[in-house]
Image (cartoon, rainbow, N blue to C red):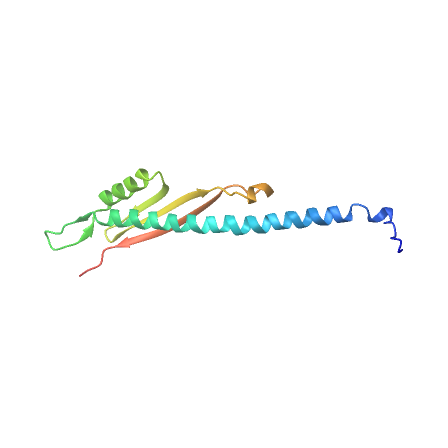
Length: 134
């Protein structure tokens, strides 16, 4: 029969430390995969809302009867801001006679990365809608 050697006192606990490090590494990698996917989705959502708000504002066209097609900056800003407010979004709106620019900011909470101290992230997206001549 073969007799097994007893581990030395120095070797005790080495496996526990290695397993703990590996588990923590896997949690961080999974957190990056899950939470970065959620951040990308939030960025796309912010872009969609910014684009829709800019388009709504750019529909406020004035001076059509005179043969000119210009965006009314005051009404366009109010319309785009109303879109953001109706959807509970935070953002900035600017308009001139040629178009409307909207920036939407969304706060995306993390799930797995919260375990290692990474909390909410803010994503933003800016879109512009301009009048085109036909």
